[in-house]
Image (cartoon, rainbow, N blue to C red; front, side, top):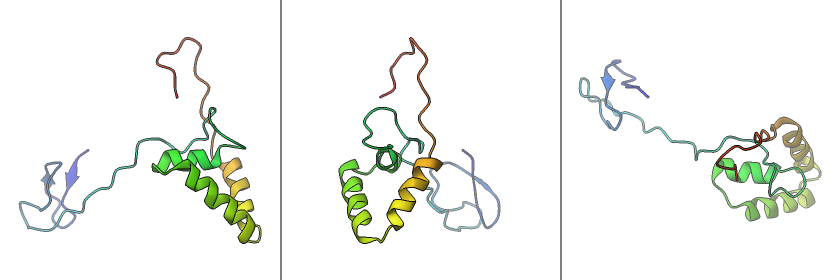
Length: 105
């Protein structure tokens, strides 16, 4: 991915922290942990919303499930509505093709 200075537009190497032309600080880009936000087919309890959020952000699924249950109890229904919205809005993981290797885990 090409990196450019936001101040002067000069092309920079990928690991640059400062612009070589104007000296401006180059913001560090945060990378996404690597998995897309999809509800997995294996390992889910009810609809896979907690597991999808945990996998896509690199969080512990047990903590997400505990926070969700506490949210169900103490939020007055808001977390329930958000969970149903996630169930509807987050797509399911695609089915693997027969004979596909390596198997998706």
